[in-house]
Image (cartoon, rainbow, N blue to C red; front, side, top):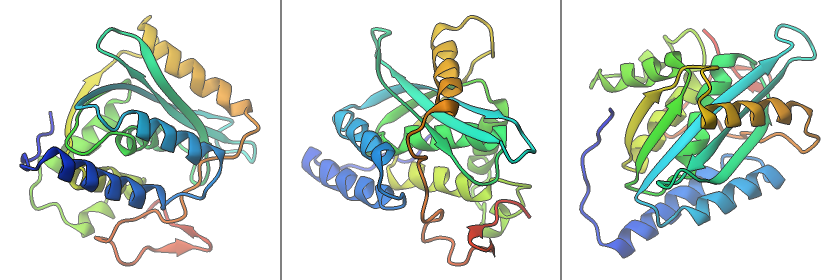
Length: 224
């Protein structure tokens, strides 16, 4: 479990701070119907103090020009109902791990300030990467670029956790083990490969703690 220090605030101040942070985060994406859908979910969940998500990513036709990468989450209430779901295609540097990490990133974006967030994922690699950072209190920007790949997405995840003062708990789910919610998001991610709606596009893939990003025109490099 990743715990961050509790910040004392009035409810009004918390809502205002959450609004400002959420507005800033959404500005990192190109505006389209997918971003609008994500924003609607964000607004629906803004009063929640605890959220549970099942996240997943999917990659097909790897290492070909027809490669397709999708990602998404479902939100499950404390009465075990699916209240919200979101899936999208994403582009650039396709990999299964990138899709899995991106799903976690999206679930954190829709979580309000100070929320306790439970992430259920079948990606042990994603869990290990994020926990590795929080087990190292002196983790530096240089360390991010020592990851073999996905360093920009990883930095975004950690920056959001800190900016929103989130308490994050991971639960490792066994893949293809008849877990109803895990199977649901898995199927949703597979279906969206054939969705004609535009992909969710990051236009700025970093936060203020990284001032310069190596690029392979016009894309930020995702690997060393």
